Image (cartoon, rainbow, N blue to C red):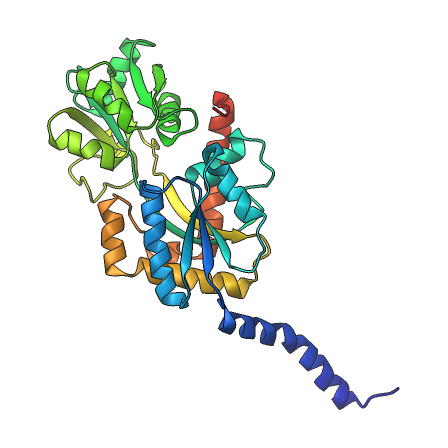
Length: 329
């Protein structure tokens, strides 16, 4: 059958428009039911608390509940895997972090790929960690600490929260950048190492602000530097590692959201808009700041930014982790 050219053009134009119309309709109807946010840690900790804040802010934007499901095990890889295998329809999303979406990819043999099995939604925030020391350590600044460590190779000790934890990675990075050697002593988390730091059984530790700043203000430990390019709002008087003599010694564990690979772009856009809405809420911003998490500017809240940032973090940390021979615990 021969069709007039004009009718053929109308049919062709309609065929091209169908995916766009379908996407608009899907975006307008999304979400039609509650969304599950998988949080790969136990309830009650800082990561879980932050996830619940973001979920509540997203609910207000989406008009549907965002239900938290805590799925623990294997340093968060079980929860992340649950999202990687979920239907890519936007109703199951991951609340992830440096450990779940970078470290685990280098440490575990995963049934999914942290680089390709997720669609980036939005970067949430990061928190610069701090280089801490016992009060009677014979050094009062970072340069002095490095000099003391070099004069006493393999004699000092630094507490960590176990293999692959941010405090462990920070200790390895410290040694790599400064050319120092010291023992990395594992604890069941960062907080359990603090009593030994206060008593002097540990010489130093790399700790998060929530754990360390109250000890500094109580006069029980020293803090020598913030592991970031810029000073932190929670302790603006503490110099950065760049200022204090160890450029590039940066550690700012972060959190972000992902959806399963193949989630339509319009749904990712809707999810991203909901996260951005949450991050603009003054009450949520205040509560994240109370946890020492720093929210970046609007241009750092896009899916494209998270994709580029995630790639850079993998390229930075995987060689360090693999060279250190970090294995699952």
